[in-house]
Length: 381
Image (cartoon, rainbow, N blue to C red; front, side, top):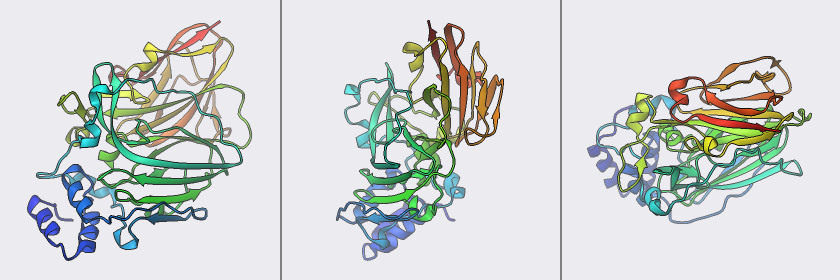
């Protein structure tokens, strides 16, 4: 695969007589970043359309027809896509707009209730937006539904998940659900601005799963905020518990410009993050702890979205009486102090809160824990 230098990009754009050829070549070379987004927009269809639902394991895209579909490249291309003069920052106009007025909000860690009727219907938008991750830091985010992480999804094994993604951005985006068994070339393909893709699936296994944008370079899209968690509960009820979702991720940020820090692809390649956080915010659960009562069981669904590093999950002053190595309620292990959740993975941790106090939960890889992956579980009488 040759590098796409500025002259090559110019040559492609000059082929105005062959819009379809440009789209195909741009897709194959994974042009999905700000430097090329204007070219993609200029060549993309102008018509809009809603997505039609399809049968389980099927997908449909609307707004441009089969000839304008963007198929995701193999991840082997990720390290080769961004070279030369291509932009490597997430600072698009929409990701900067209104940054000074962006308020901080605590990301609610409580697992949302199950949908009724055995069906979850989701229509999300991929959009860029400024996100305040601390009192003094705003990032230029690429998001699902305007937040980092995206919304937590909760369903049961065997439920039907019907998902539609509409792209509001000049940059192509897609959706990859780790809980799905489905043809990724069809369901997880990229869509252009004002286009949509719809697919349905039925989760086969219980557990905590990652979802993310799978458009190449995947590192840039995940690293700029396009990820979240879907929790699939087993059909047989687990013991009653207070249930919380923690999504660990890393932030690789450029210097402040116009009051905003953009996500930086070159820093992502270095694998040395500026911050490592739970649910997209620095130390938010220290300022506002997770509160439970003495004698309650707590269940943490922990997802590590990376894009590089694991979450070595630990609660100071406690032990997990149950950790599920596979799909709950099978394969439990007992008496665990710390367990690593790999990037792209998720696990379920349980403990009985039989002692009052304030118990820090951390990434026990303390180089990362001290960069923001820490909170307080407050057990009150």
